[in-house]
Image (tube, rainbow, N blue to C red; front, side):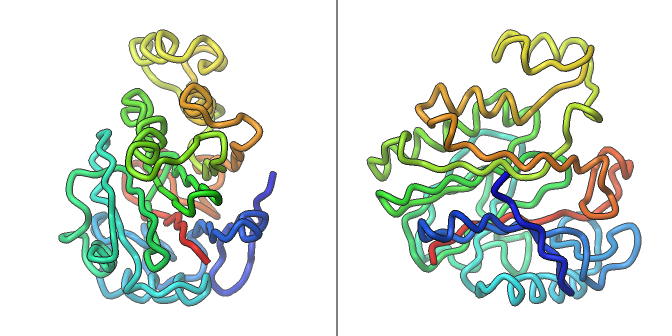
Length: 263
């Protein structure tokens, strides 16, 4: 699948083949931190009720294991919308040490900075990482069902086109771990919306949605080559020993972090 799981003191997923193109993509697990239940143990989010000092320590551990500087990290506020923010070096550290100064109102960010590390926090939603080795640009987005219906993936690609003159066919897209159709049962109205927008293949066995498939469809429509979209098939809800799941853990849990940066 292109993903590797590193079971070290801090465990994380990586995408080794992207490093040849000059990009680092890593996704944390919940293993190797200091947070107490229900956030145990490597919770990387400040806005879920965890002890901020524990989150500080967890972020230090994750950044050290991956090899990026927390001062370079930029986090979006993530409001389940469709705003894509262009970020430059002046935004370094926004959201890195407190949620209060995260990029406001944004669910996606794009940059051509070689100094920044872009990060997204999830616990069932899909993290989207987009790398363009030709124009040396990259982006990241957060997609739950709302963001997916709002075409956050496609809008991130379009914003990269408008701002940086990228060609979507050159981009490589990583869709990280999220809740999979095996566990993602939703209401009939939502299923109808998804089928209207993306076709029946996004609905699996009754009212179970495939967010990854919906995102793949919209990204291909936006010009991304299907063979350049890589999907991590781990289900967050099935694997709460390794990942956080908002749904499986009744809304009281931590968040994993997905990051992308130039190397």
